[in-house]
Length: 232
Image 1: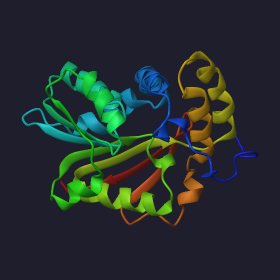
Image 2: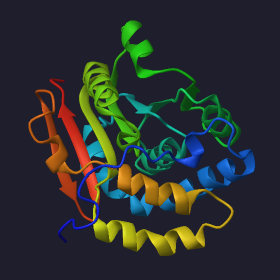
Image 3: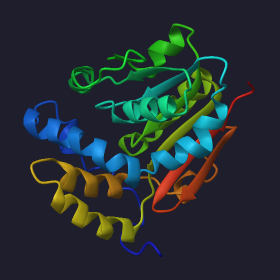
Image 4: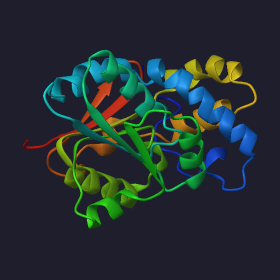
């Protein structure tokens, strides 16, 4: 569908959940809804099968880092899917927002998942690395300098794959999301979801500006994938 309305990013829009003084109950309900929506809206089950699982060797533990992990729903999903395949994983989630880390810790029982309220650059400074680095719905929060930092950090931290999964800006995506937002009453899903779509990147925005080794792909429905393959 041609972009007639959302022709460029609107970075002036700020999501409610990014306000440090936002309503805590509404924030928690938003994180609750992420657990329901992300497996199918963000297509993480499909991405796990196509991108993550093939890199998980059966005879060793695969280390996975989730940058901007929010409430931890993606790591809990990866934990469940890898258990179903009898694959050993060590999962780390980082987010500079301590509210997100506190929520994730309170809702995670798996001893294969750890969370830390830090920035990716701190892990780079520590000389750490992981087999796989992922993020979900982080890209649209970032301006150009912050995107550059994320891509540089995740390429440095990942040995095999860095995969950033986000919304692709599209008029139909904005219109289609309204029924989802209406269903998620008591949360910030409606307001923040529509703002996220308007803030999100399109592959055309990234043409010629991605660092070497990075690839931008538009995936259905309304998804943007940035991937970087490592040497190991």
